[in-house]
Image (cartoon, rainbow, N blue to C red; front, top):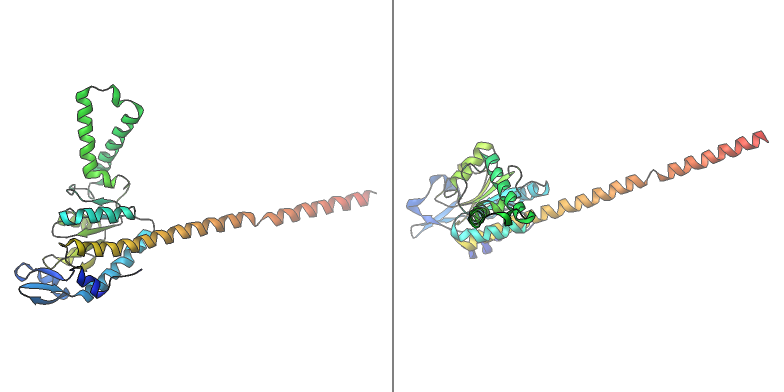
Length: 269
């Protein structure tokens, strides 16, 4: 698992915070200095926190659990969608559906509705509808796909949340806190880190900064998934060997039975 160096974080602009007047005092431990009225984030602490978060996320991925990525701000949407999809994890890049975690059963119903529409299209039921009904269902399907398409495979609550900009995604963070779901987040100098379990102090506005952090954590998760796959192969191989092992015993039984029969014949003779 490789973590970005100080120079790589610096080049990506991870150190740029917000104006001093917009700062959140709770971020003081992660601020290195102030320059021209702008707070500068301590990148040594950023590097350490990224490594810590990546290790924890790797462990979650290795255990086969899901991490939900959340980023609805323009400059983070595509990056998050690409990186999350690369490790087969669910993500939300459009408006956060209120109650998505705290009222998960209702969200699952909406996803099932989307699946039902797809089934109608495949079995020919859709072709028997009127033009107006087709149009209504098509629009409904498109709306559901836009908001819930990326979480269609999320059958249960995620084991963790990864958030870009906790200030903007405060509802998602609040829902996760309420349910005891650990929160990993990129936290800028204007945000409150108190509701975040794994704080990554970094610029959450620049696309390059977001990309380097996400690239690191998703690479770690990919490693975790590979290790999980390798362990499954080893377990399967061990199981096959275990099934093959008793064969010699059966062979011995056959031999001993044959020897007993021969001895009996000899006695009769």
